Amino acid sequence: MKKTILLAKLMLLFISSSIAQITVKINDKPIKEGQEIQGTSIDKMEVMFSNPKKLKRYDFGRAYLYINLTDQEGSSYAKFYIIKDGGEAMTDFLQGAGKTYLVYSKGNSKSDFKFESSQYGMYKFTDVLEAANSDIKALKFNVKVSLYFRDVVGYQKYGDPVDLLSDASFVINNLNPDGYIRIGKTSFRIKPEDAAKVQYKGAGVAENNLPLLDPISTNPTSDYVYLKLEGVHEFKITNFNFIDTKGKTQNEAIAAFKSDFESFIKISSNYYNKKARKKLPDMPVNVQEQFLKIISKDKYIISSPRFDLEENKNWENEEVMSPFEVGIFKGYKFSSSFRTSDEKTPASQRPFVCFSVVYLLSHPAAPNKLILVYTRENDKSPTQEKIKSIEKLNEDFLSVLSI
Image 1: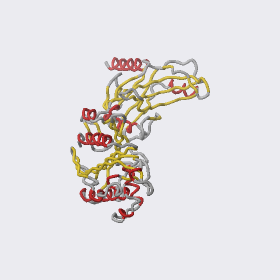
Image 2: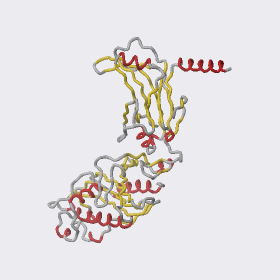
Image 3: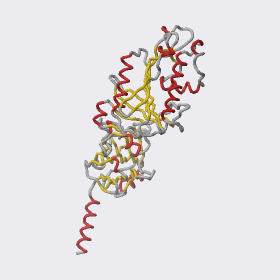
């Protein structure tokens, strides 16, 4: 009986080793062709192949073991690849059937594959899965694993690919098991049906030119995401910034920020008007520059007509930030168009250059955090209709968020 079982195992091993195929293993288990895998369950991913097509010669060309993750629009989201050049290297690689190549292993930074992505700020497999959960078009990946060869046809030029094995394909489901889409690495989430309703398309990671606000500062590399909300004509980028209260209560921190921001708007709007500036507090230039980043993509002084003495004699009594509440959020809101500012040109003749919509909110679940949401658009004709459309995009989005 034991001999029969042993013989059966040997036969199975012989048959499996003689099959020409690419095998993908998730968490040490081979997966089936077309199988759907939950992204959050992937702790380890490996690839192996057996019995590739024999090549007549290996001298000139390249062999590729290639993994391509495409989103629901058919665009390549991320690629993992091993490339072998030269006869000896390719012979060793292609004839080494049964060897396992590591794509990813939780807690292990090493991988046998090189990686590239069309998405900003992605450097490894976990970055891809985390970002995909915030990106509507990437809630499912179609994954194709290929082994192929390309001849050298010129200097650094290669011919059409010749498949050495049939592709292996499967699907990674990036939607969280709870059925929600995460907003970047934040604690906020949104239902897929609500995301479609409010035209949310995805969240990105921090860029290099982020505002670092004083005196209430934030760490832009970990506490910042930007959101893509699809407007009538184009994507609008809304910035979603977390601010540390630095030992203050939320109410104290909001009051301090609100006071400084309101002073900045009036200072900037009356930058060259000495009569108005006498009534306003001093503010360090570096602090003004940080606030300027919230309302403008450029670094020149700009003026809001409502708070410019030359355009509005009642500027001192105008409310800068008004109370705001939507969904789980409470705080203050500001919106305005802005002109250029100089001391020679009358205010009414200065051109408009941009508009900004700003929300200062209490974090509903983190007492030591505030949330600064802002959209800034360069625009030479910023109508109220345009500003209202951006307000609606932002407020519709905020209204459906949960924790």
